[in-house]
Length: 265
Image 1: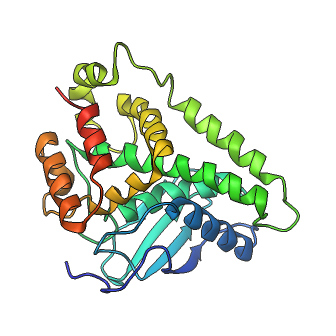
Image 2: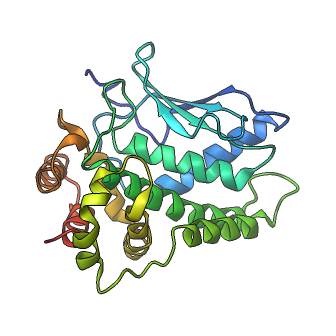
């Protein structure tokens, strides 16, 4: 598929709101998603040659009927459409959902041919979940220094509490024996899953910790899925294609290597 623009940058793509935001101020919604984007994308370089020129954030206040997702469309090939489902003034949930879906955009999963599939769909899911959780931490820090919404200067504490709850929902971060042995034992189930589900979620905490040690490794996400088969590729080949893509774009390859080590036989 042709690229949207040779100079498009995810960090500066125009943002537009659509959908139902209940009684939340659209001005405040835009402030939060802009702050969340800045937090999520700071600390590393954007390398992808498939970045959108525009982001549409589509609000669905329908109690989970429409889950957060990327809408794959053909009518605006330069635009990434992010769907979120949040209640009134639920800024932590908004930042978390937006950050996760922004991670998919960063991983080149926003164009109309970007449908994910097993056996490696789980790889991107755990990576963008860790990306979003890392972003929440930075957003909380930034909010404490400069409140995003007037009248809510201490909301950074609520963001940190929400982030902790998300981490706890993923369960005990310490698998039996070691992450590598645990993955080997659970690989068949992990590779059969779609979305962020099943035992793969236990790997998120390891990735969050690794990103915290060196967030510049997030640059590798821009090298994901730049090959026709995308996540339908077997794991060992998927990782090799990712590493080759990292070399082509000039990213560090450190996150790709970390995932190879984590899943080594």
